Length: 258
Image (cartoon, rainbow, N blue to C red; front, top):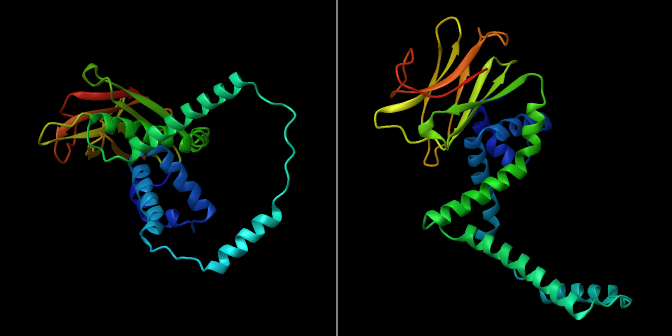
């Protein structure tokens, strides 16, 4: 699995489309697991998609319209009336269903197109974005986790952080842990989260200290070259002074056996 830095270097190429199959597969596996890089990729796609709207439209010549209309008129065929005619109640029901679908879609698009002016708007936008992320990345995530070279473990938050969701993907081939979390509370000033690989016997392996964004998203990668898949160990996250510590000093915030 590639790192976040490698992913960011190739994001632009993937957005524009010329990435080869192997590169696209590596990127898809990483984006399926990393919400931070996935958000950056979506922002690049949105910016690229918006470029045509910034160009001045070209007005077609009148003869072009005439050729198009002539082709439409020439291909027009008489369609036989269907033998089945719905009843008045069935037609009304059909209109109600169609109107309900239209209003639901229109309301969703309206919510997404509005500037995020309040908590309700922000929640609506994020819910829609999360749904799109799940629909768009479910197959990639399933393919990744079906591999025998990775293991996925969810970390359990302490009672004070029930909304936090975190997990570790252990990449056996690269001998790395890829840590991801969402809804992490903002740490107190002067402190950062730090992730550790803590074997049952021996000293914990220090991972990097990491920051969280405004949405509580955070990620980190830990190199565990000496940690074998058969070695009992735990993944833990603590609050440490900014810059990180050599050994855990803060209270355990998240943990899970691997």
